[in-house]
Amino acid sequence: MKVICRTPLFAGNAGDVVRFFEKYEERVYVKKGGHTANGKSLLGLIALSCYPDSELDVICEPHNPSFYEELFTIGIFQRLPQ
Image 1 (cartoon, rainbow, N blue to C red):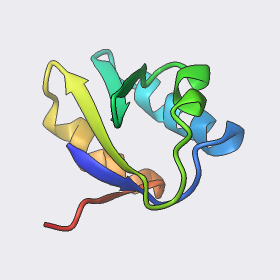
Image 2: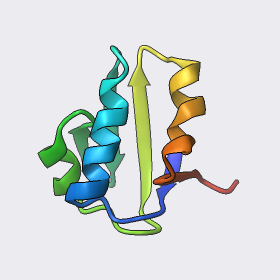
Image 3: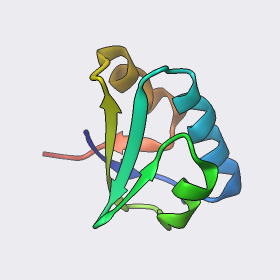
Image 4: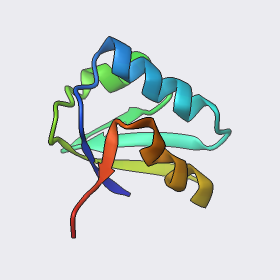
């Protein structure tokens, strides 16, 4: 799912994202441009250099609708306007 990052993903926020992703057994990946990181890796997320308004693709494999529903409750991502 394409999303926009509302806040920079540095240590504090990236840690919140990793803790959220770790609640799920599924594999989670975050893509920015040509780079992909394991969503459950703090260093991987920080290495993507996500700033406010960065467009990301968050992928949950296998697909889990509840993951995508809860993704926006942590306040770090918003849906990409269509």
